[in-house]
Figure 1 (cartoon, helix red, strand yellow):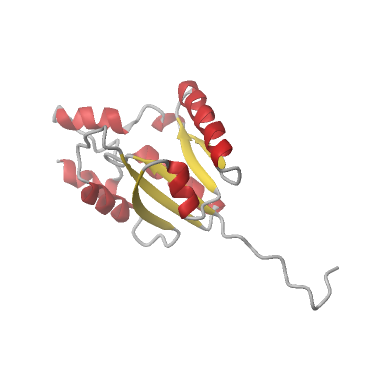
Figure 2 (cartoon, one colour):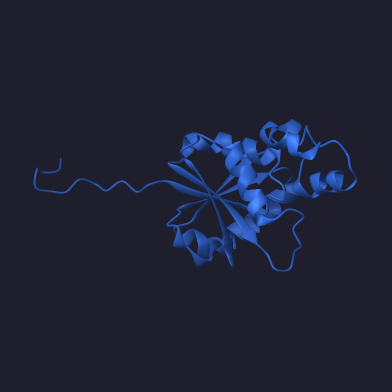
Length: 166
């Protein structure tokens, strides 16, 4: 039993980073974040800027949409970053990296990245959350193709932003 002169154990805030392009955010992304919220003190939705990829939507638009989807949720923050995700996590003092898994191929890819990230930043733990079966076929890539083809995407994006695609 600690004496009265000993300092109490310091609590380390549980910060998770959920990285992605979110071009656009999908119902699958939103579901992963909502299911992760009870586990963490803060979830940073981190929009990675990749100069090798041409985004369909501007960074500003993607930030606006994510903020709209999570309006009123104090645990959610939205930020953008360039470079390695592991470096962003270290900068933000995040101890968890959050990823959604839709398939066994996703698992194999994420497992490899998790091992590399752990080698670079041992205190970073990757948390994988399985997509709900009804959401497992949804990806930003597919949603972008539906948008480009002028299809209906209302079922694949959060209701808060679906009106922007009519």
